Length: 102
Image 1 (cartoon, helix red, strand yellow):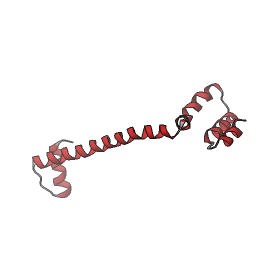
Image 2 (cartoon, rainbow, N blue to C red):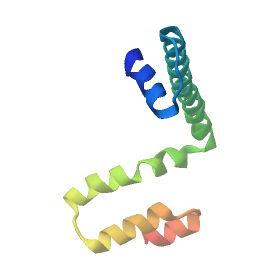
Image 3 (cartoon, rainbow, N blue to C red):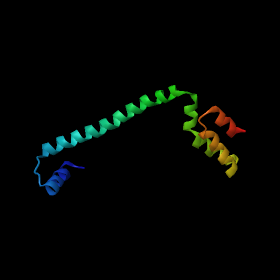
Image 4 (cartoon, rainbow, N blue to C red):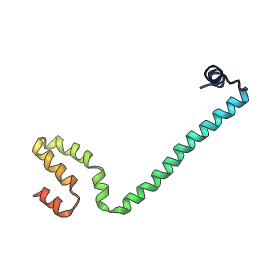
């Protein structure tokens, strides 16, 4: 939004008269806050990926089960296979996974 439009909006909505410089500085500050928030989130996610990888090898595979199933159902369509596939994917212990796979 342009500075003139922001100045007019402040006058109309809040009955506040601001100078061109005040509006310009406020706009710059708002953009810095917004861009900084995005940068902080990116840095947080960058640190999250190694943390998840350190949890174990099973985590990486569980994150892409939906894509695996999408590729799998092209070749083997059917509701029975879908139920078995997702039962194995949701297994949280080795014995539960083995039961689903048998």
